[in-house]
Amino acid sequence: MEELKREARRRLLERRSALIRLGPGRETGEERAGLAEARFQVELSLRLSERDRHELEEIDAAVGRIDRDAYGKCESCGRAIGRQRLLAVPEARLCLTCLLGAQAPG
Image (cartoon, rainbow, N blue to C red; front, side, top):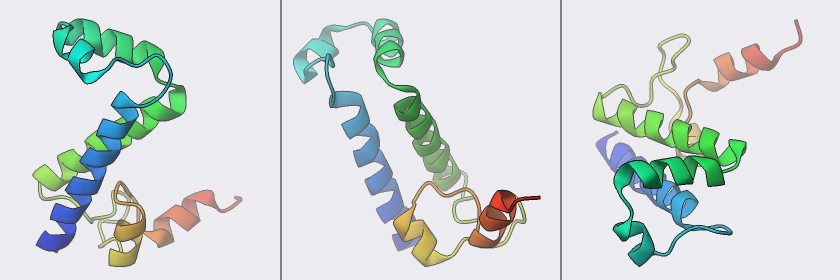
């Protein structure tokens, strides 16, 4: 599980970096380094699409779960999230059973 956590953290942080630096109108590394942190965060939030903001939030939450040693546990039922699911979706919060149950018409 530790290897899975290390790999998930690496992939999540790579995706986070890509979201922040890619796309129209985003600063280069040198320009970004020159901005005050608060200004950068405000500009970043204005430039990111709603989908990108949501993805960043999910990535940050997953990294937080890794740091708290809560990674890989379903937030709904508490059971383990399958290894294959975590490899495919490292930011997964729910096991497949809970995910599919939440999506079922009811």
